[in-house]
Image 1 (spheres, rainbow, N blue to C red):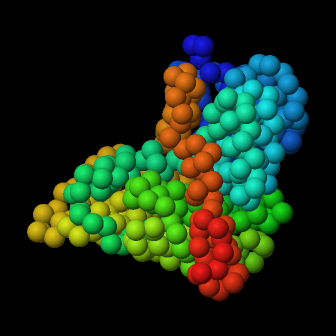
Image 2: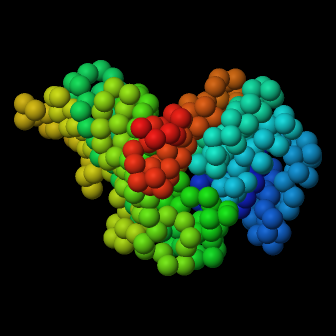
Image 3: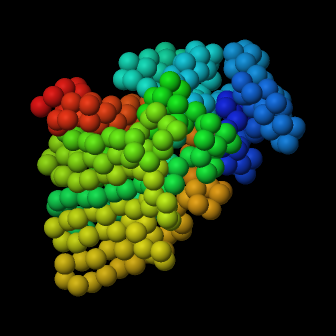
Length: 347
């Protein structure tokens, strides 16, 4: 296989601004089809990029013209379509959150194992240069023992950039399942697991709807998280940051502090206890404020994994571990008590 023949299922904003452009710029991939239940939208995108259009994803899966698919649909369809694609013998890149329950996630992972195909979840924060550098610095002991962290991901909301505006599925509980916590919080959960190289054991959360009166999903969430080793910190996810997008993370350690995407000029700033400050310019993080055209490297990694036959960095198992934190946060908010992440039970 010289190139991976791919199709994108779901032609909304994430497909138009991330997946499709990244497949087109990738010399190892060939976009051959798009699919959307909105036939007019599918046809318009297909004409624009001179590819085949499908309205029914089953017809696409049975066509035999693709090796892999990107699943860019509303959250409630992620598991259904991913499992069908894997059963059809195709590799799958699924947007986050990977599913709406642990049971769905397990079925997706099982389908990938049975098919002998790759299931990758689109957690792009692992591929940001400043995040990868921070993971390396922590692993090398540069800031000593890690004590705490704070991380945030917030912007004014999907209505700014979704193709359907306020009518977007993002704001409909039956299609989205979860709001800002699933859209943004799951990104930061996955990032922290990656940077710290640890799993979370407990979460206490407030998950609220207080900014979007037209929505029935959460738009503001604040969590307190604890890792297995006792590192504690906060995570905020919001669709109500009306100023500039915030996608920052700060790691507090024994010998210093790492500030990631917290400085307008330097993507990583290391402040050491001895007074030394090291500033890194490692490229810009993706931003919805600027149209989201920066390369996330997710598609690049996905196609490379297929061609090399090597398991991708963000497997279904990894996606499920990040999802479990989100599910525990929802339970914590509902019970108004701290919840254990792995089993989602009261502690």
